[in-house]
Length: 321
Image 1: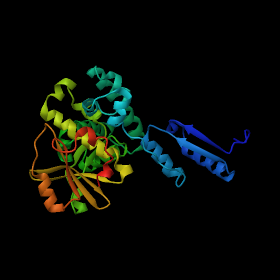
Image 2: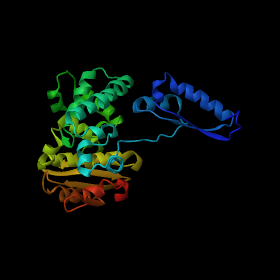
Image 3: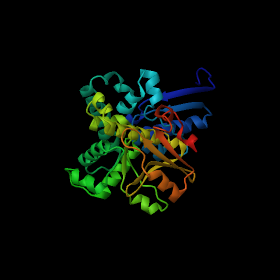
Image 4: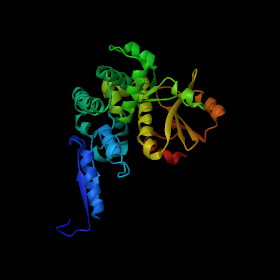
């Protein structure tokens, strides 16, 4: 810039987290450019969300804006690869897997070994205090298998081979949530303390993770109404989570005995109840009971007799308010 007498320029560095002490170097150079009044726009890219966040918070406080690039949406997969809605619901939003969906064995192997393993072993374990890596891996696999299902951490412990406790599992689940891999949705309640004590509803951030650990074959799972209904409900959860940060809303579920609301979205004190209606099950009394107790701004059905799935997956969730 100095030699060519340029007034501004753009610098893009990909996979910045692979450089040792990158944040300290970037801070030093950024401050030097600021003092020299160089109008240099710097973009730091990285596939390790935790490692990027750690470096930004420790050294670059007040000097950055975070731009999150999440998992690919239905529209993106459709535009890039011509996928149908059902294919996106089942195979998720990893563009690298698009050419492999006709070979289920190879597709699963790619997801587990090329996508999941590096994310868990490098991103999560290298940046967090993980005392039992095997325990976290087992939690992740079980959580993905139970996406869109309620399962207490106590019952999860009973299925794990490695010893641990509920507190450890809860902390590991929080870390997986920060990585946009897997979360445990809390039960919606007026009392925040009751939310934290609730049984989590496991939810993947990408339906490819559910399919990798629970799917059998696309043609087989697609014609099973109960199984397909679970994939559809999980896909609705994926879409809700994908915009939660930018839309500044929170996602919960609600259940009292046999009455259930699949997803509850809260934004700036306003609430929307969402019921997913597909081949999995018919309508239950959850929505009326929830409305009577909490008086949400809106109560919507997604799917049969409600917002069509193809339309819903292209909606900005915050626009529902």
